[in-house]
Image (cartoon, rainbow, N blue to C red):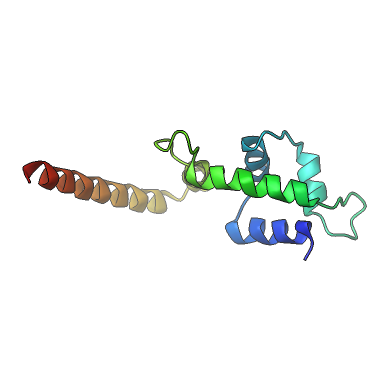
Length: 122
């Protein structure tokens, strides 16, 4: 497989949009235009197609690590992958999904607080 094919499969399987791809590269210090992303994602038969180099794929993967887990030096920051997913749900008007997510978060916060209280009592 070529680097471009690998990136395409990752992008499709993870449901990433072109804005997400640009943000991932930005997290690794590279600024891209929308046309550059479209050129990489287009098929080989397309007149504007450009291949992706191994260095570019490596840059994408390094940026994707930060995108998925947040910055290593600031682990309390919500990862962009999570933030973008929440905003995308809102943009799509998926209120039920947002309400379910809110309920999950409230439940988790209660569990964490209970565990902390148990640790303090011990």
